[in-house]
Structures are given as structure tokens and as C-alpha cells.
Image: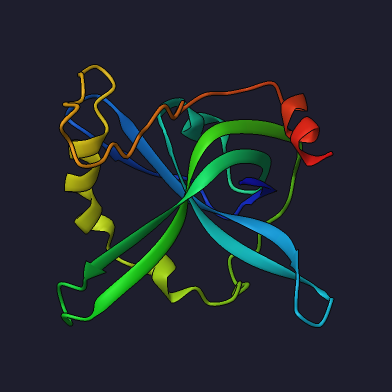
Length: 161
């Protein structure tokens, strides 16, 4: 998937014992509604390492990534919850900054403000860039992804045409 939009807030960073850094933040994109009108959408992104220092709130970026679906039971209520995020494999820094108004409610995405602690073990278990993965594993969640990669911004436009 390819998205171009603006960072809706400063990246949230999570540091791991392995030395890796997980960077999470929403991107604001423009989309067409069913009525054919433009609307703003907020999509959560996850990427690794160096990216956070290049992405202030309001920065226009292009990303290439894949959808990741999470299911978990809420610790407080016991309710089954779901979340979708984009795992970024390429980040493209584009030129413009946009003033992002903190007061604007972009589709009131209730899942955006959830407690992500449930995912910490998941990341520790499946992302170890300096270790070999056991081939007998049932899944390899980072299959050949190149996280933290900063690419030439012109590549975004090649994908869009």
C-alpha cells in the first residue's frame, strides 16, 4: 500500500532491550467519501528506528507498507478489541509542512487512544534483526521487510503513476 499525507502528531517511541526503536504515529490522508466528497482520514503507522527524528508533527510524508491486523482482549473490560495499522517498509520525506490543529476530531478513531502494552511481547518475539529466525516458526511477521529505510522521494511518484 502507498499513502501520502501529514504526520498528525509527534511520533510515539518505544525502546526495546535489543536496541531497536518502534515509532508509532497517525498520518492524515485525504480520501473520497461515498458521496464523492473529499474527507480526512487518520491511519496509524508503525515503523522502526531512525524515522522518528525526521518526522515532526505536520510533516508531509509518503510511505510504502502493508496492513497489520491486531486482535486482543481488553485488560480492563475483557472485551475483544481489534486494531489496524500500516507497517511501514519505506519512508519518503516530502517537502511541505501543514499546521495540524490538535482540536480537530478526525473521525474520532476510538482505537487510536488504546493501551498498546499488549503488543510489546509481540514485537520482542518477532523482530530480532541480529538473530536468525527458526525456520520451524509458524509465522515470520517481518518477512523481508526493510524497516527504517529512507528512500529517494521520487520513488513514491513512480508508484503513483
